[in-house]
Image (cartoon, rainbow, N blue to C red):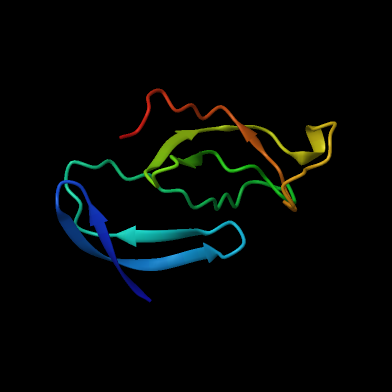
Length: 107
């Protein structure tokens, strides 16, 4: 599925829908042709790992302001649901904590 992506300042690019979750209202869209951006490969495929459900090496935390502006930060996972001592209230099958930090307000 092709998606038109609007970026500041007044850029429009075509993207491809890679994945989505309607319950969390989030979509992962790949965009080619961006300049001055350092892309990060977020796919986790470690054939050397013998863990059943290994943690990814890098994760992204995404937040949204009340006006709808998205903020994102990259980090590393530090805990998974087996390490937590309280149940998830978000309806998640897996809950993970990371060291992602939003260092400034996105505007």
